[in-house]
Image 1 (cartoon, protein in one colour):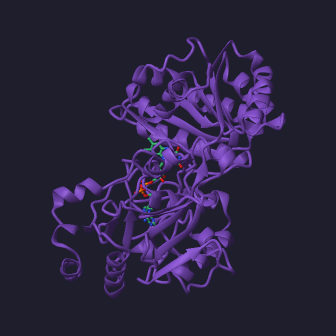
Image 2 (image 1 turned 135 degrees about the vertical axis):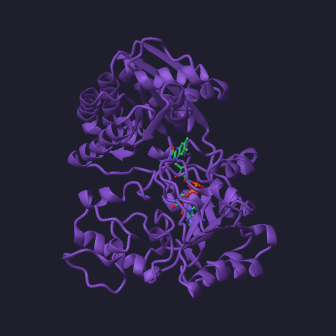
Image 3 (image 1 turned 60 degrees about the vertical axis):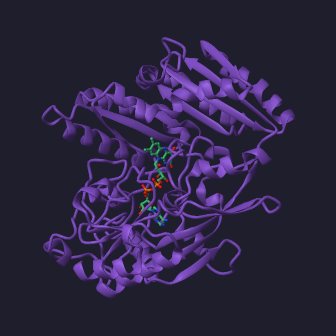
Length: 478
Ligand SMILES: Cc1cc2nc3c(=O)[nH]c(=O)nc-3n(C[C@H](O)[C@H](O)[C@H](O)COP(=O)(O)OP(=O)(O)OC[C@H]3O[C@@H](n4cnc5c(N)ncnc54)[C@H](O)[C@@H]3O)c2cc1C
């Protein structure tokens, strides 16, 4: 590391290489704070060429590297390596080009998600994927996680809004992956690869026209089952709202404590449904929506931005708000088919009672993406372990119901151990072949996504005996 650090200091400006132990600790975790590691060295490059230079030096010395955007990830994807370089893109925040006739913008990877919308809103455009962290999270992180958000039900995830990426490959070349390229969809493989296939240094995003009309409805129900039935009925009626979000009583209580969102008191569940599109279509869908939601004990309708913001305030702040009612919590992210929502929510309630651990439910109900918030007191002996058990059991439930262990927060380091529950050894080996095609030396964000790093060139098959990496303490076998 010493010789690498000296070479990094020659390559980059003096203040772009951090080795001071106190400053290094700023980067020791992402939003999932119970996985921590102090990086060997942190670099703050300002261009693709500088990132390529850093990656080439890592190759020469066989040192791993991890890319980091804003560090809001919730699966430990940007967890640094003590024996590695952390490449932080926070100095790469320029919007390079806005091309409205072709509805595109070209941005550096550190640009925040919301900054893109802010740059084009006055001209009647926006960037559609809207993670709740959008004020802070970077577009590079969004690409790596294939991030979603409340409005992705209708408008699609990040992968549907990225046209091209300039990428520093794991051996230090600068290449462009473009949706229009013939041949394999390498851009599709890169989006959602969680930093394991290289570092995005420039992103071309699609811009979307601001819809002619937007109407937001808040429907309050006595029970979460009634809310779930309304979701199924909306979709069955052929309506695809821009968003359908649901919160249960505990998450409403948290949001109320944090931001005074004034949702109807006594609600067991609130549903937020947003319709957008041409005015005539929204008007027609709105009439049908009111019929479907007639079982709600209170309905609120917002037509202007201020009223809409009031309705969204509680939902957008829900994760952070839970900190008001619990000293610690795990944000889980799983997916189930929409039709299984009532059974899965009932089963989560059962797990919560059985383990004496409270679970608040906030979710993108339209696409079955659950975000159970598993609450515990980290000062209480054993509570963390019980919360972990509940959190893992929720993922098992999602798999049993034909869903997935992650909807939008990624696998990272946190869920690598759950991958073999969803995928066979053959599936995982096949995924590793893709990785090896990009990163044969396994230097780009190693230890993430896959449970046991099988080395490129190793013959796939059932492993007998202890893996050498496990033996040396560099990998864990789950
Ligand atoms: C309060 C809160 C709300 C959230 N809400 C949502 C939500 O609604 N939807 C959602 O999908 N997520 C949500 N998230 C999770 C998180 O914000 C997203 O995953 C986001 O995309 C991470 O961006 P980041 O810049 O913080 O990335 P980081 O946390 O810095 O990194 C995330 C991953 O991306 C990789 N990476 C970062 N930059 C690059 C790059 N330039 N090239 C290659 N790889 C890179 C890292 O190695 C890591 O694997 C939320 C998080 C919080 C804290």
